[in-house]
Length: 277
Image 1: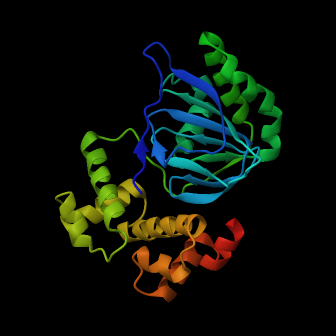
Image 2 (image 1 turned 90 degrees about the vertical axis):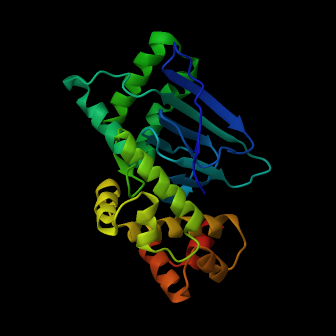
Image 3 (image 1 turned 60 degrees about the vertical axis):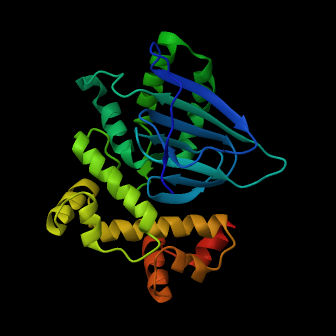
């Protein structure tokens, strides 16, 4: 379940892309891109996956995501409905780092975890969001700046437990990619710290310090969260039994799987499945 790199269609002369998506399904896979993104849901409901977060979404939601944050929306199938959203994507650093824009820049920094804005207060911005895809050139730039300024005054909550840093030294980024690839390929079995450390040519002690510094928690805590995130998606998207899902996500003990799932999701696997059914 590796996120795919998405090429955003921005020309060399453009820094902002605003469009309205309207189809039967949100068909984009779990992906990431080097641009920031703001997504407003006009129509549809289902589940959203933002970083290591998994949870429901519904009409009227507005989510801000910093660059390189993996994400996707999975809609509930509705024969009579459509999936409609306004999406705005823009290159990093198009706004100068000046004191007058500190509130916006700080909000974008926090968006490395994904920000979900207060649904009730966002409704007043719906006409502005609807107009954004029709703007071009400097009007689009000024419109985005004004929109972000308005969002600074609306309450929000972070979604992903971990932030996904994008301004990393190249060797750090390379190591993290190797670690994520390893976890993606091996989360379904017992994993040993020594073998993960060997992937990035580090001692176990050095690896533990490096990973905790980068991700803000120990490796095995991250591995558990990753497994539970996968389990959450399988509970929603498949008809596998809870025990099948637990074993397929690398848990050798079902009681331990139930304990970990309840710890990270605040409810049992069965209740979680019923809630999203």
